[in-house]
Length: 472
Ligand SMILES: Cc1cc2nc3c(=O)[nH]c(=O)nc-3n(C[C@H](O)[C@H](O)[C@H](O)COP(=O)(O)OP(=O)(O)OC[C@H]3O[C@@H](n4cnc5c(N)ncnc54)[C@H](O)[C@@H]3O)c2cc1C
Image 1 (tube, rainbow, N blue to C red):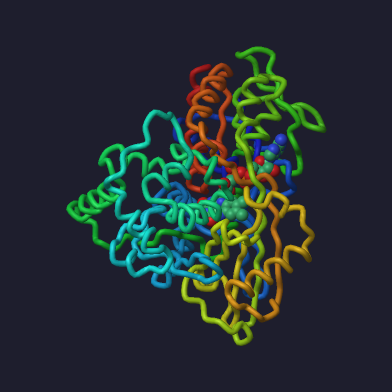
Image 2: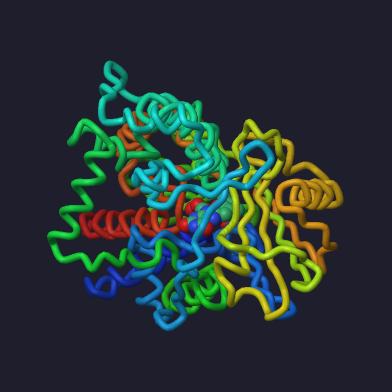
């Protein structure tokens, strides 16, 4: 029987196994699949904990609906009735601006404020910032460079204030990223495509909306984010249960991958011996794939290790609503780097996903670390809680003591798609193609969100099956 090994048991590795089983069943192919995960549990950065009526997410808490792979997988796993949208009628995001929370103007398209009136009413941008934003349609394209930073792109098109007060804090919250070195081509491809086609983001967005209306879109864009009623962890459990033909091993770290020649089986060296497989999907962070491949192909390993990863810390805090002393009108706030805080963002979970919090309680989740504060992950629990509470007091006026706190540390978990990332991916693709049967999936390459990881694993699984069929 032909064999496939998958290294990594996060959403990428598990969905690779799921798609392999599915495609093999459909093709009538018999495969021996094994998945190896170094941690004692599956899920990677996905962890849901339930306690006292609270549903606490240690890692991701929802997925973006514009990319359908996560929703489709949930449906296929029988979780359709568990899918639940964020409370969009209460969707407001605030930005800390000179110590005060100011609302993001209504009508944002990615990082771009698109509605003139809300922009003029907003206190987030100064008059100069607003006028500069209105000049967007008259800006020329950034030319002469293959790739450029998000900073350069956004400040050139939309002005410095949009960069500093909107784009930088939003991307810090999502990617833990430094916008000065983040690749515009890798992270904002939709905006670059609009610019290329229409010469202006505003014109492009307006035309896209008009086309949508013309083609019968209802005007109700639906929820931007979806989650699972009992927590994102349910997708991991359901994936695990659905795998009927995959040998899953946890608590085993693959130390290295070797291959005697391009037609022979891959040899996975583990502390307790060696595994062999004809096809191999590495569904680990890129640097971990690099470590594994060091001996087999030093150049490929070097390229994979060039993709930097930042660490991040999440802090969940539960409060008694009566003592909280503040109503929460929105989904939370983001913090521009100029504000000099450790907090990158804070989600008001009890508003965004009210079912995660029992009645009479308030649930918040703070984010620290990222490129802005690499040392955050090494701080003691006491220090992290003290910093978080102090900054919640300063930003939101929260005086109450929390009923509980829960910290999750994620070391080297957030890839940074730095300038040149698209070219690096091409080079990685060329090097990988010299090793027939080797496939990469995960958050280091073509998108960091869960839907991107699932889509990349679906592609890797199809390619692996196709490769095995070609050997017959
Ligand atoms: C705090 C946080 C919040 C996030 N929020 C969201 C969100 O709301 N929505 C969203 O869509 N995305 C979010 N993301 C991003 C998304 O969750 C991740 O990009 C995605 O889950 C990564 O999955 P993965 O399987 O590729 O990697 P991982 O989850 O990192 O899994 C890789 C696995 O490989 C294993 N491994 C590594 N090396 C070896 C080895 N040598 N041998 C065996 N096993 C190995 C690791 O132990 C790990 O379990 C968030 C990420 C974080 C950290």
